[in-house]
Length: 269
Image (cartoon, rainbow, N blue to C red; front, side):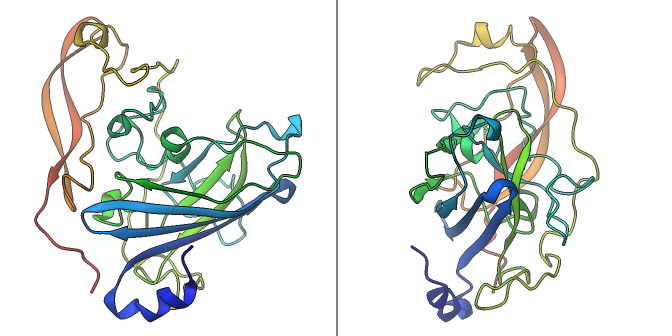
């Protein structure tokens, strides 16, 4: 488990740490720690999880995501213009159901899609969770988890709990990782409206075998350009590609977001 004192002692080295304290309705709460290491997956620790009961009114299992925008100071998870949509720089959309076997085709912020939802218990307390995610990045800005938020939902997408991701890296926390309640000085540009999500959602993959191209061509929505993992590219640039893609049984020229490898080092010094 990450210790706050250790984080403070390492501050001069600008190690990649971030934290989110998530709170909300019905006593639901959880703490998230993110630890990055260039060229390695981001380690995510989730602990102090409470309030996740089997009560049907809560609507578990509970999905959770990184959202693009921060939560307002009053902690209102549903306030207009705040939290907004999932972090999704490659425009995967919620039209494509995330398959954990193919995380490169999942929304970056869809943590529960890639690693599993929270399942309720009789007591509401859950054991700590730790996993690695090779697609959650601290940089560049367009893909960064910094300055954003965590939202925990019920199975019908109702927002139950939320909290801002804070770090000394972007001024949202001090050297002891205590929130400063200041806006991020790294991620400063946010979407103003949530994108329209295609419907109905489709399952692009089933298991560990990639769906054949002739089947993919029948999907009503195009597959995104797959994300580059932190193994493949410690840093990336986000651009676009215009190309011919077959979907909905029709070849169409479309423009899609695409990551390319960048040789730039970490921006935090």
